[in-house]
Structures are given as structure tokens and as C-alpha cells.
Length: 192
Image 1 (cartoon, rainbow, N blue to C red):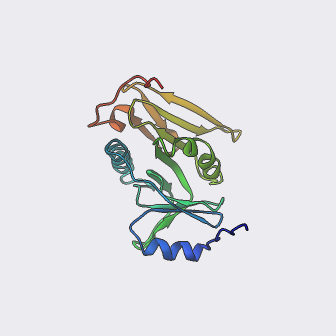
Image 2 (image 1 turned 60 degrees about the vertical axis):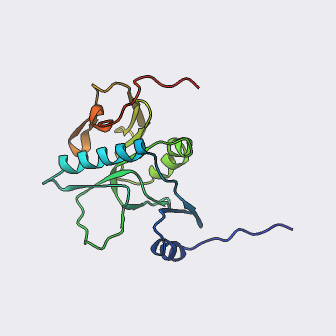
Image 3 (image 1 turned 120 degrees about the horizontal axis):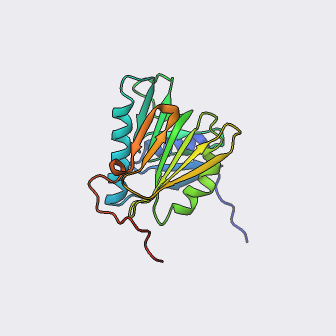
């Protein structure tokens, strides 16, 4: 006998999220608990969020950290490690943003393939998205996917602390050294 899987509504998801400190991701009637991060993961997430916030001070753009939920037309509700929204005003009780321009994910063994593949495909449904950063926490590697004028996405890889990630649509040059500040990381990809 085949068991049917419960399909959750968005109202179910919001109710569950209000009742827990866990970060929950919602897509297509399914709810997933998001994994916690390592010291490296949390340090990088905070470094990037802090840098973006300071760099955007006084502009029409606002940076958010990993506690801000992002929704998208694809139906995904999730918590990226950092995000930037431009030209919108929010009230203090807002718990979900949309129309992000920049999204950042710090990779882990359990999320790396999802963040690079299916999650990126879902993120691409955001019409305002221009920059997607995928950051390795244990060695220097920042993959910057940027949308081109023809709608295609081109990747640029930074593997040195002296490189700069150019977030042109928000006017920010993010030094790779700032991403990895306060961490001892290898400049070489580990052998598998």
C-alpha cells in the first residue's frame, strides 16, 4: 500500500514557521528544515552581510542577513545567507522580502549541489535578480553568477584573497579578503 505524502499550504508553512526557531524552506507543498552552519559558514555569512549593509548605507538598497526570508515567483520560500533589495520600503514587521537583486549562499556538503543547481533555477524566477554568489567556506572560492543583457548567466570564479567581486547593479566592489576575514582558509581546493 502506497502512503500519500502530506502537501502543505502556504498558511500551514507560515504557521509552522511562527511556532519554531528553526528555519524552514517551503516549495511546492513541501516543507524542509534548513541545516545549521559551521563556524566558517556563519563567519562568512556575517562578513558578507555586514559589508553589504555598510556599503549600501544611504542608498535605495538594503542588505539582509540569513534571518530574512525571501520569496520568489517559482514558489520557493527560503533563507539565503545574505540578500539585497533595492527601491522598496519595508515596515518593521515584514518577515518576507521579494524582488532581490543580490543573493548569497555559503555552501556546505549537504547543500552544495542544491545551491548550484535546482535552487539556482528557482532563484532565476526572480525578475530583479542580477547577482548570485556561491561561497566555499573551507577554501578560497567565490563563484559569482551575473545576468547578462541577453538574459543568460555567466560565472566568474575568484580563488585569491586579493580579487574583487564586482556587484555592478548595486555599485559594490566586494573584496574576497573581506568575505574570508577572521578565518584561516586554504587558497587551494582540497583534494577529494
